[in-house]
Amino acid sequence: MKKTLLLLLPLILILIFPVLVKDSYFLNLGILVLYYTFLSQAWNILSGYSGQFSFGHAAFFGTGAYASTILLTGYGVSPWIGMFVGAFVSTLIGLFIGYLTFRYKLRGAYFALSTLAFAEILRIAVQNSDFFKKTMGIMIPLKQDPWMFQFESASSYYYTILIFAGFSIWLVYRIGRSRLGFNLAAIRENEDAARSLGVNIYKNKMIAMGLSAGLTALGGSFYAQYILFIDPPTTFGTEVSISILLPVIIGGVGTVLGPLVGSLITIPLGELTSALFGDFAGVHLMVYGLILVIVILFLPEGIVGWFQDRARKKEAGMNNGILKERG
Image (cartoon, rainbow, N blue to C red):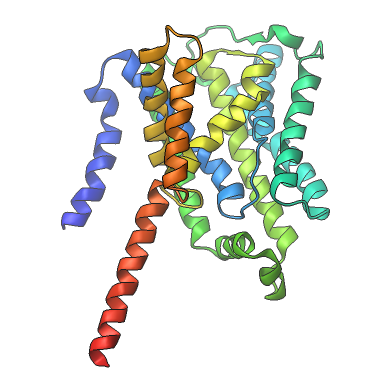
């Protein structure tokens, strides 16, 4: 009963957050926490569960943002449809990257640098193309039409991204308990050993890449419709990839709740350091980075990972005690 209440209370608070908080600043903060939870879960599927550390998820994010925006501004297609077109295109790009990198067995830093390179290639291609308005970016006209993914109140954006984040958490939870999840975990722990046990390395990595790319593109579409402006640096830039992966690293790579916990810490922390040191150019970023380095040094498995590790050790200690008593 006590455990059920402990689980239900945070869920109820998340659901009624827009009712309790009327201040637009804090409501926007809540939207950002859920938004990065969703993006980080997408990254978690590929990099957390299969151990393929991607440093270029901006490629998928930017593809989703540009696809839905161009379909809306150029052809009048609703972003509700455009976002799935963007997800489809992004999935194809992800599978193409996966085909080149996994086929030639790139791992570790080589895989990370390859994904970074693809994101940079797309950024340079977009900012030099007339079709994508080069560096000027694209302004989305304000219509406040729900069918055009524009709402009058911020709470509507909150509940929209809450559905996105909830779906991603459920999906990662299901993957973690499926055959795909077990295969990805085996690949992450020891790829050669997993291959010797009959795990299809290439196929499982490609599935993770496709899922991760498609979901990230949906996040890019949400960003475009929420901000109503996109340009190459804010969609394909390296900062985008870093922002996506940081919450997972802080919260716990390869865990279901890690991205949510990481987002709850990193987003308000970033806002706090910006408010305290924003008048001194670059200082708030240095303080923010220092805090993140300290967390990474002392909790390399992340906050959720640390608690899970302690729980496992405690359980193992209890089992050993029982065995000794039976003696």
